[in-house]
Image (cartoon, rainbow, N blue to C red):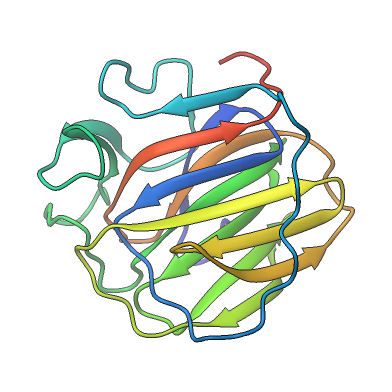
Length: 206
């Protein structure tokens, strides 16, 4: 998402579905949830916990990404952190923006992104193709900075679903982008940590 505030992405080639624990999000209001998309059985699974392997082979589109120790991580001690380049370091913060999410089907600068934002009351799905466009949105409660939360997206064909902290909140269909990389995303002055990125689907190398 390249807008006036700018976005920051770290990418790994992959497909189908991704789940990430990240330190920024919100709990959802109760609502009826659609049926969960079922992925094919026996598909490959890649997991990045950042304990033994960093982001070698990833493509950094923007921002300052680093693997660092962080107390209280969901598993192990190491997490992937995006440090806003012109801010003092402060774990999980942001004045203009405080967001985190998952990029998927990234190819030639075009992609989808599902994200939560601590400074806004929403959980949203966007696409980007020379400009940002919102596809779906769910209202969520005010977030708590500095806490760990989970975001998940499933993309099977043109059918997308998005989860926040184990609750299915978004469902949408779109046919713009069929394949591409999976990555992690923040925006503007967000300082966001990520742990345990798990990808279910066919990968195409680093």
